[in-house]
Image 1 (spheres, rainbow, N blue to C red):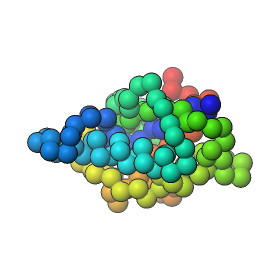
Image 2: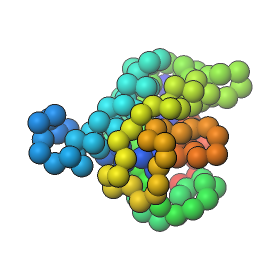
Image 3: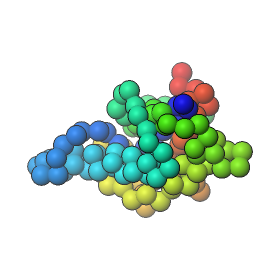
Image 4: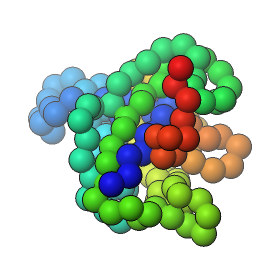
Length: 136
């Protein structure tokens, strides 16, 4: 099984709150997490050991800038499930790009449009095999 890591400027905190939760921040965070799960689930089932973790400061792996960001690692049931030509995450990058999100949660960067952006000039989400990231 391959392990993947997502780093995103989008608040994907897993709150497990119900829809009737009175706190709109918690509802939005869970909705964003659910959207990421559904996009990944288009091609594979996944499991994870830890929920997404919010970090502050410098972004990892040669990604320029400092910001609140979320790091989440997961495993899928089959190898090469997101392989597109020679890119081991190409299909997942395609699937996540443009997924609508709720903004103005605990993120401290302007996310416009309100969508996951994995391509182009306004990238706010990066995904790679864990062996491709340097988080130190």
